[in-house]
Image 1 (cartoon, rainbow, N blue to C red):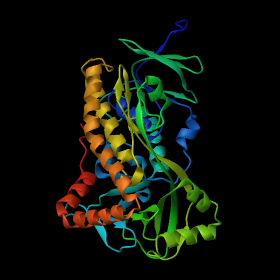
Image 2 (spheres, rainbow, N blue to C red):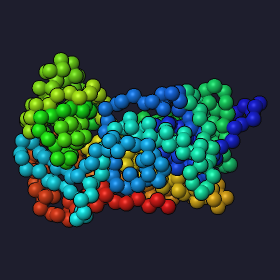
Image 3 (tube, rainbow, N blue to C red):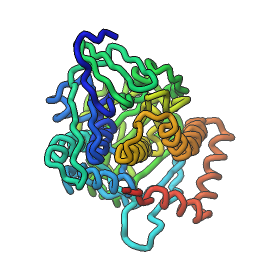
Image 4 (tube, helix red, strand yellow):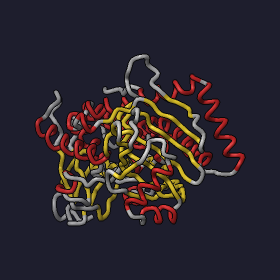
Length: 410
């Protein structure tokens, strides 16, 4: 690369300033690591993200990490909807497998927070807490490279050289991709990914309903559709609906009154009449699992490494736990004066993150396959699975324990 002008030196360069990239930058800064944050959006757009309809189910472990990063303090209490339990239905049956906290205490499984709120809180924490230096270790500087993209990069034995589209050249010990499940940076790293196109679109929309909700999430596998209900308050929930693309297009084309009647009917009037509380949003469904999470002086975090199907609501939680693992390993190496891009360090992160994500990713694909198959044998099998799961209390306790598991904030 052209060396006519001096390169800007940082410890870590991060591509992608979504909630995962912002939280990762914050985690590095609190350990004294100097990072560059590269994103095609402007600072104004990052500070004030638009609503996208998505609600994030935060586990207890994820909430602990966000608190440790000072992100949690920027999430208003009124934006947190407690998730006290979950029910899984199949077809028109009123029977459900119920998942409740494994503890005897009245502690929720987690809470629901709008994705927009988490993004705004992560940006606020990074820009205010980092500037204030709220830890014993002096905060590492964050270099913002907003409204810019990477033109090209090269990695050698000692560093990664990154050329931005405006001509600026950065030099880092490590390049980290946090730019989503269709990551262009991952492709440029030469890391293949297994992509599963599910042939469906997901609709998310907040709906008011006549009957009060008990702060219990519903996962409802109907015939030809999958429904979920995420409680926001007693008379408002976030509806999640998956349909084939043509059916989704027809639903979104309906006038508001017809749309509301359609959603009410899909939930079989179990919560009474449902009316729209916000604009609906629709997204194509695809799951992604990278063949590797690391390469020489390069690493993947968040959806760039593992893009989960939303049926288990674990995508953001796994991404948050992964960036926490990597940030802590990098922080320890930084304090010891070691190379942040050392392949041995990155492979330890990869090993830990694969152990944490591979079983759940495979299980999620199996669940999606079983519960979107409307053939008679599959319908019988899933009814049996629900009955066995409800009868086997250790299974339900295991799931609840996973949702509530504490994080190691070292």
